Length: 394
Picture 1 (cartoon, rainbow, N blue to C red):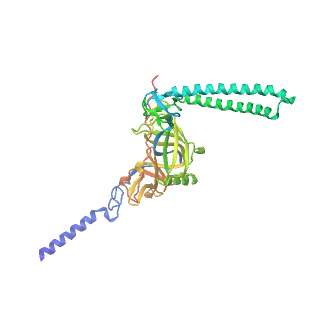
Picture 2: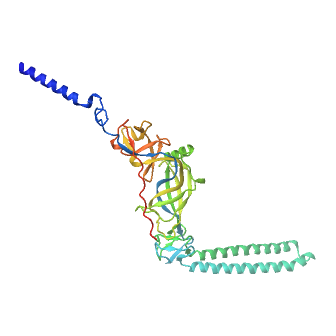
Picture 3: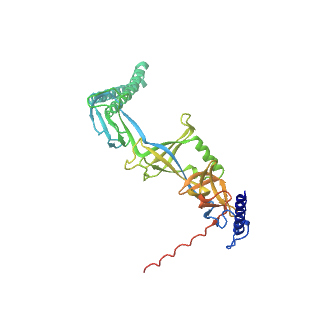
């Protein structure tokens, strides 16, 4: 018992001695700092950016597919035997270039017959006119009957009508003969030939080939209905300014990630929204002089020309992700780190565009956020002066 009492007394005295020597009683230490957990540690140093509105270009990107600006089916206008194909499949052709030749012999014979019919009709008309000219003075002298004179005049009129009919058949025969030369209606790239030499062409119902015009080229894409509504909402809130008359500049990003060197413009936007896809069909036209773009390619369509007149941006590394969504740390008036929930929009280079949650003049912490907690005191680092540039050599 006596040993236990002595040990307890020794431990109590040691504790009192240590307490007397410790600065944790609230008295300042030699350095002038008060005691307590973490006493003597300066606030962490952070770098901040001051949020300020600025005008930024806004772009919109969609998935699109290229198509020929004109896709034409080539068909024969007359029936006959196909004698010759005058083009190479898949090669470019010019407007008016001969593509096929149909056997012209039957149409040449029909033309000769039509020419003969015109000659015969003109001869009959001339005879009728001579008869009428002879009877006219006799009729004036009452030397011929009214019936004979009327028959002569009618014969002249019938002859004139026969000449017109014969000339119409002659024109038709010339057209049919010219249609034996099947020419390209547009300039473009030919497809596969659907008929070969020696085939019997039944007429316009027989498809011979197709031609696709690739310069200029079209790009079809759809704008989602919900995104269209969001754009209109931002325009009404003056957060977004569209180009005048919707005259966007259109650029293309190809499948390999490269940008197509030419740009174009929108040339069609459907007022309807497709019930199948929920998108509004839109089309752009771009020059394609070298034929680098082929119909059917999948591309990314980039619309340029819109601006965000008063955009607030912060560096991407300043935006953190929490259980409730994105947030940033803002330095308040007490130089404390204050978490601020934000709604981030799209990227602008290396920065986020902040849609809501920040105001102009807010000081957002960029570097040092990993050492912070809500309400933690911070010290803003001073901006480092730029290094002096060496003098230019003369």
